[in-house]
Length: 424
Ligand code: HMG
Image (cartoon, rainbow, N blue to C red):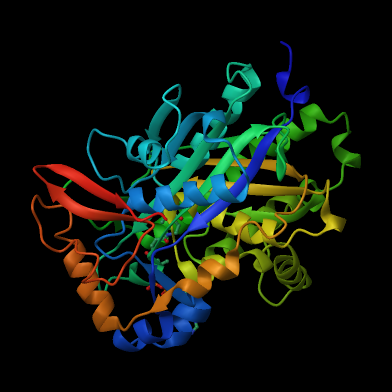
């Protein structure tokens, strides 16, 4: 069969992220929970956590990220032929988040508009589908807008509480991309039915078997990477015994980041698989793995450490940090990306760097706009958010939460969600 992938270059042409206005400091949260702050800050690697107020939901965050990517990367809205929102915190059992976003961004009616759910994997599944749509040639020169948007909530005082977060990342997937070109000839997938993390229809907060979920993530990484290794060997005519370790070709390794320490656990697993050994404490291998993590993974976890888990967007938030740091010497180098969704599904793939973002992601500007809140204020927001989806609820008042847009949720009236755009 003809391999279309080698003929066409498909990848990421633009990327942008959006965050809620408020965040808490993890030291404050630890003290309020009578936990040693070192557990949250070093044990999990989290420094701050974004908090969405009742007027900020999955739709407003997605629209905010979509607007940023269109404006920053000069995308003609009429050139978007496919909109996919990946989310596991949708706002309706039937109506997709993407249809609200499609209207808020003023996109063409000649467009496919869908929402995808598979825990944190949903948006990456959207990126894969958009890539295949372009490779098939059915895109008719149009590009896809894929948005990852979520508000991660666990119960107050639970072990999962310090691994919450909220935010969205929007990506433009196109032919001849300006930022990253996917190596579509190499791919690794993994799926297995496990109850590691889920959210029954009657709950706002997720349920999780925390330590089991870590093992499920690592098994999925090992499985997806094994398949990637096989596809790499098949497509590169290199004898296995002469081949370089496959992961050593990556200038950076990006992971799904539910909390920063998880990326370390994942990278260690990847190296163990490549090196064909178990990395024990106090060994040369551990020293080498630590140095390798510090150079190829940890520089790209800064946003994740300050935002928390944003579920579908967490891999792409790390990618935002990476792309903001690309310099000329890295052009044409390869990176790896690993996405995991509980339940579970995973994908391991690689891409080549085309160029840097040239300041378009505006990382500092977005981070500096946020406001720190106290733990009392955070708890008030979480209690109010429980009521935000109720019909005719009064908690979604932008003045009460001191918000001014660009997109806000004003509550559900006559059973219809209402939104306002505050654009100049
Ligand atoms: P826990 O059980 O309270 O924490 O919750 P712990 O006792 O395992 O401690 C965590 C780490 O802190 C450990 O490090 C401790 O040693 C260390 P490790 O042994 O793992 O290297 N520690 C300290 N370090 C310094 N000073 C101290 C101290 N005390 C302890 N004083 C857990 C941790 C992650 C289980 C919990 O937060 C949780 O359940 N989180 C949610 C689940 C999760 O994030 N799972 C990740 C994999 S599944 C996934 O990624 C999918 C997901 O994104 C959802 C989706 O797909 O939709 C979650």
